[in-house]
Image (cartoon, rainbow, N blue to C red; front, side, top):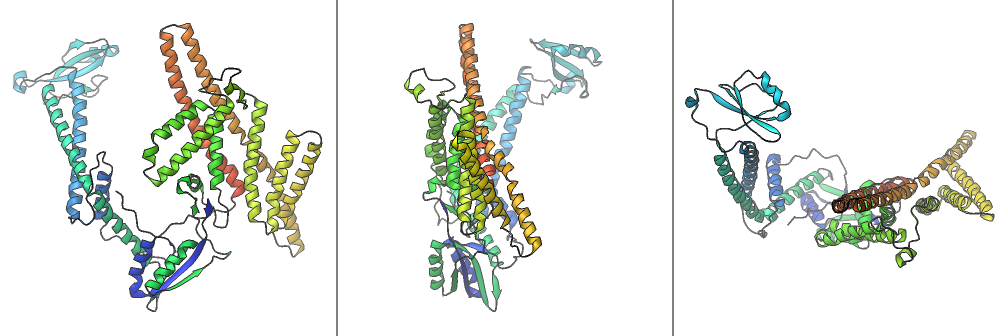
Length: 597
């Protein structure tokens, strides 16, 4: 991946040609516009109608059943189609609410049986009020002054009927009354059956209405495009019968804009950005399917145009960190199977293609690390076997894992410092990241080395701190004695970052801690299941299976959450903190919207 080079492009022409030119540029879709003046507030011609059309489109686009759509070119009444779709949406909602209400009422009434009430006059104007009272609340009936009777009971409840012309107060009993309504149970069930049939018909009608999704989506896209053109038209520079529009375009697209300008007899100026310009940033992988690293980078920040592209490092390190936190080959196989199951479905969209490649890399890295760690759903391979021989990572060895985690952190932060030093190679500012690289190397030599390496490590640390001091002190121009004092102060202030460097590298110990926690939890569930299986034959086997299933499912979910959160955190906080000193803004092309199918 790389940051795409940009060119500043200005197009100028007669004012009557502005609208057609903007539409042509929008169709070309390669220009990130630079506003040349503040536009008036955007006001769609009919916001209410637009919202109704969007609501209708979402209704048919979200339908579980999608019919073959009508092709462009078919004439239709947009307002009538939108109204019909929205009426179907409201009808479906009314039927769904009615169905849910009937299901609830039937559940309440069914325990009393199919009761048909006589006319109110036959009861002397008295009414019956029904309550389902828990047995533990039996004493509450003693305080009821109205006529009541227990007409039935089960193992946990009493079925109580209270007689009174008016509805009793809600505080009569510690439970709400059962709401019968005027219809008996058989009538409610019949009404539910009719409602279900009507609901099926409404769903079938919704499926038929999905045939309009392409045409309706095209109308909405065109309306949104027109709004954007109107907004852009208010941001162009218009004077003396001419208009000018300016923006950033990828260098390889400048020729297409020049050809468009020549075709429409417009003036065009293409310039290379200067050091004072801030072009937008466009990260582009060589293969779009490998753009997962750019997605991860954009999720947190956008590198400045003059910075470097960290996408590949983020992509690779995230997979490694995730694998170390998951720390189990069995869980990696599960991730791989899930990815394979959804592989074709994810391939239907560009973002899904990037996601499935990322998941495949994560599953592969986790499988390799899990095999090296010798963990298969928390079970170690048999001693002397091939899998045991290649299990060279000992997760329970605190000293070994601490060293591995710290070295990985030093390398990760070192890559960021090396990239920063390369970008600043033409100035003395490069001395700062080079100095911190020397401090990291010297610190590792002092910690991991012995004998002469200790002496060499001390020299590297000293030289690195001196380099940081000089690089920080020379960042400020010095002409007076006060400037020199400030430069010295800057040098000492630069040295204070050593605590941040030390803390950031030690932060990578979370890889060891989380991996150990995942492995320990898996072993704990295995031990619990094994103990139950042998201590309680028969029933113990069922309990052991449930513990293994639920225990490993919980550990799997926790491992994924930890791998995502902490894998990204080490990139976003520690890595970006040393590798990206300036934030940019993403490239947004002035382009026509895609028509969803």
